[in-house]
Length: 311
Image (cartoon, rainbow, N blue to C red; front, side, top):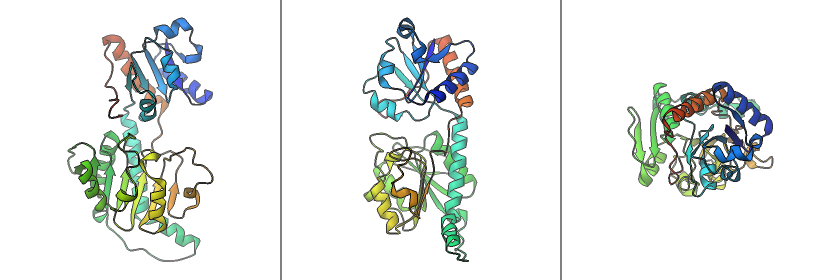
């Protein structure tokens, strides 16, 4: 018996159980509430999506949990010293989907769509200066699988692309920076910054008044990572002063974004409802099934999250 544990609504949990059961016909998948106390004592693996830590602690034999989400930072933060391994979802389809969104919204900014939308509302017929893609400098924050895939897709579409990560990375065709000094260097030479960083203690608030000041005047931001990575007040200050031209935001400190938040009606902000790279239950279930099948055969736990790094 493998429990599915989540804080999402019941309908969403049931849908996940159905998708996982279809992908793993030889396993019995059920909601945690459907397990007997005896079954809970025997569970060595669980499948999760933003689980309540107390639910996980109710499984004393647990060796590892497999998340159906790529982001597991909340789980890592809430479980200060877990006795089990945490395995995040690594889905090639997710990287492709994210890179598609990164390309789409980079083109949105590159071709001045926010400006033309404002001009339409004012009934202004005015062409903006054309910039070739090779002259548009794109900076990618975070060079994990999502960042690497997105950087290469942008480069393949003619953009000048550089990237930054905490540790040194090498990607053919991409200028890679790392460390504190590397972050400043990347920001200072980026017309459009795309944030794909994991949320950790080190990345929380990394885009703040000090770091945002290094962006060229008129630069734009895309945040497809996590809301707390950007300091909202600092970003709004830069937008209000026209130091930055636009922000495309798909993630926020609180979701759904509160109705009273300034982002909703700010002329230089595009609000998206966390849709840049939605998880596909069918694709995710197939990956989870493969990993659990391998575990059943070998007792080997897939590559797990480093609790210190947070990813």
